[in-house]
Image (tube, rainbow, N blue to C red; front, side):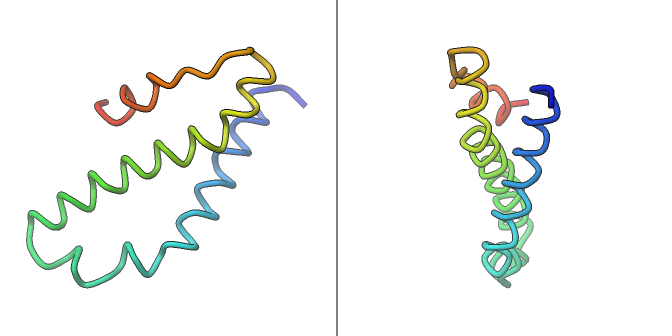
Length: 79
């Protein structure tokens, strides 16, 4: 199985697991109270998604490429 499939599978599996475990947190009434809370939720979910995918795929990236680009976390959040 090629590295592209492995990375995609690991990223999707990690996101499904993470968001199932934290579903009550993201659907709490606090996040829908005001527009500012909704925008904060978008920012928090973007950051969480980036961190979860980076953490889940880092071992595979290291095994195949012998490096882990940590700057990608920051660049993905800003993009």
